Image (tube, rainbow, N blue to C red; front, side):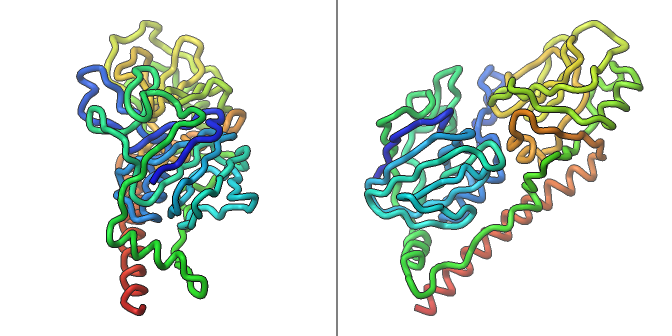
Amino acid sequence: MAIEVTRPGLLATIQDKGRFGMQKYGVVVSGAQDIFSLQVANLLVGNELSEAAIEIAMYGSSYIFTKDHMIAITGADLQPMLDGNPVPLWRPIFVPKGSEIIFGSAKHGCYAYVAIAGGLNIETQYGSKSTYIRAKIGGVKGRALQKKDKISIGKLTALQSDMFAQLLKKDQPPSWFVKYDNVLPFAETETLYVLKGSEINYFTEESVKQFIENEYMLTPRADRMGYAFQGFELKRMKSKELLSEGVTFGTVQVPSSGQPIVLMADRQTTGGYPKLAQVISAHLPRLSQLKPKQYVRFQFVTIEEAEKAYIEMYRYIYELKRSIEFRVRVNSFAD
């Protein structure tokens, strides 16, 4: 079983949770920009949480399915059409052999995820299938998807076979779908919770105050490596740069321009700019789904509040997993 790329669009890559434990060798983590949407897409089709999916940025991608498949599309609403008909998001979908899915432009959000039951038959490199284009590793030949690329799909598990059979029932199709707005509200002006950074004392009190009280606009200088924001100029009390040290997804660095840059999935392993703040893990999906020219506000929270938000997000994911598996088994028993 396979799918074929008929149009790559702006940027489509293979991504999973990323490759961890390799940063000491200079290998970046990479992985999905929006880990919440990736994992939920996998749950909806019975894959493992860590399975790879297709990550589509902004607009323009399309795919032909050479066999019958069960898929789920989550994340940004790129207005997908299946053989000319709108495709519902955040739920399992049956795609007949020979059908084509075409993604339009983003109605809201930035990155959409297409998970396919059985997973993607792609070789892992350094423990991950994720594409990191700059190093040409992972995914399909270490690059973005191109026209005529074919992606092989793995075999269905027993659970997935039951899910697929229920999906084909015309009188009572499966009722599982996801209410995602608690994690991904897709607000017009997003609020991102942040922790205080290790170099926050490098900045003037007024700058720290204005960082929280003002809105910042995401500029077009936004990609999988970093998001550059524009707003109140953040001034330092100390002008010297730092020795390079470890950074992570969501680190808010401030270069000499005084405009914050937030590091994303394809971030470098180290950085030398002062770290003003750190976006909490539970709000990284909100950060990732911002579109250029969208405004955000930053709000300081405590480590306890950050931990609580993270636990709540993953409690929701694992409760969803148990709920779907229970529904499938009950329906199979009833048949």
